[in-house]
Structures are given as structure tokens and as C-alpha cells.
Amino acid sequence: MGMQTLMEKMQNNSLPQLDELYKEIILEHYRKPHGREPLERVDYEAEGMNPLCGDEVKLCLQLKNKKIEKIHLDGHGCSISVASGSMLADMLRGKTISEAKEISKLLKDMMHNKSTEVKPDLGDLEALEGVKKFPVRIKCALLPWTTFEEALAGHEHIEIS
Ligand code: ZN
Image (cartoon, rainbow, N blue to C red; front, side, top):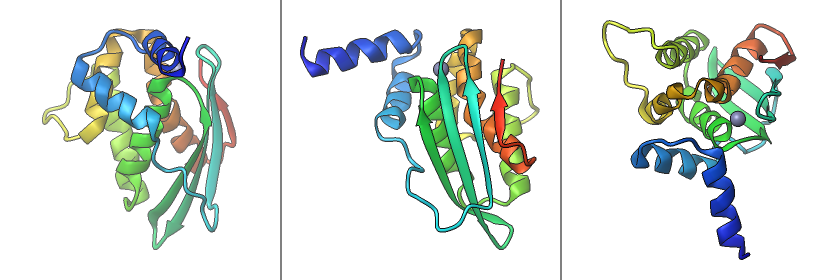
């Protein structure tokens, strides 16, 4: 079996049936995750695990003037958890802590089907909405975000179940 075929097989196995457009956005982030550059200084960090799927993420934050200057993510996991972490790096860079927490809350509300008065613009994160049809995978999508919140709260290791 060629490498390409093997890659495709793995990706198909790890992705539930999602709309093609959403699937494409998720796979793009999965293939080249953002936020992999090292930081000069670590102000907050945490490691999160999702044993149900085997996802692991390490997240480090570097703050400057009360804003998230840089984010570093590391780890491994399924396409949804890796893509969600990559999107987190894009979305939270340059935000204040309270803005970042608000985005995290909006994503959780979206995944748990809570309606908001105005539909927020969540950019690429909207591609994760389709995942909510697959309750087991919601944990994969939320792992980097929960790890982010736990890092701010000073918890260094979390396991979601
Ligand atoms: Zn997963």
C-alpha cells in the first residue's frame, strides 16, 4: 500500500461524515497545524488528554500587555483535535484573556447546541459545528479549548471524560 493511500485511509477512519467543505477545512488544519513555533517565554501552560480517543495536547501561552502574544501547541491526536488546536492558535493570537475566554465559551455553546441571539462569527471554527452530530467527537473538538482554560486557571494536567 502506498503512503498516499495509507494516509487517506487513516484520515477517512478518523473523520466522521461531515460536509465536504468542512472536511476540507479540518484536513487543511490537520495537515499543517498552526501554532507550532516555540515561544521565548511561557506564562501559562497545561497538558490535556482525551483518553477516549487518545488525543493529547500541550498548550503554552506567552502574554504581553495583557494580550496573548503567542501560542504554542504540541501533541498528537485525531484530525478533529489537531485541527481544533490549530484554529485555536489562529483565533486567540492577539486577543485579551477575556476576549479569548469569550470565544471559547461561544464555541462550547455552539457544540452543545445552545442558541445565541446573534450567531457569532467563529471563522474556521464553524467547520467544527458538524462534529456535534457525533457526541464522542465533541470532546476531541473541545480538548484544546478546555486545556486553554485550565492553563489560565493554573491547572497543569487535565483529563476530560
Ligand atoms: Zn479525537
